[in-house]
Length: 128
Ligand SMILES: [Zn+2]
Image (cartoon, rainbow, N blue to C red; front, side, top):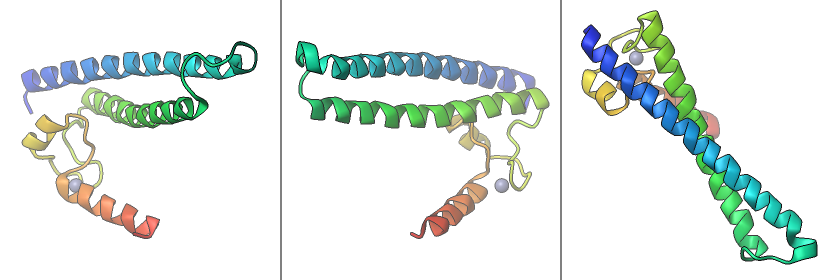
């Protein structure tokens, strides 16, 4: 991959990382609000809807945060590989990852074959 391409990949990854970080910040603030709302319950009554919806909302936010944190780890890993000059190489078999795959998912670690193999292994481990 040429330097210009790598530079634009880095830009996209850094932008994505910042985006995820601010999103995570926003969600942790939201979680605090939900927590406070529940603590207030006893004395002040509930002004934000019933308990059930708060719990569901908290769960929804925590699921999204978990996913975002996963992506953040992958984005950071990709930035690290850019620094090390191993970006675009499959971390499992060492082959070049297809450019159109990197274009679609700039932070992928594996080529499409390894990704499929890993997903199969995970599925087997989980007993599917
Ligand atoms: Zn591979």
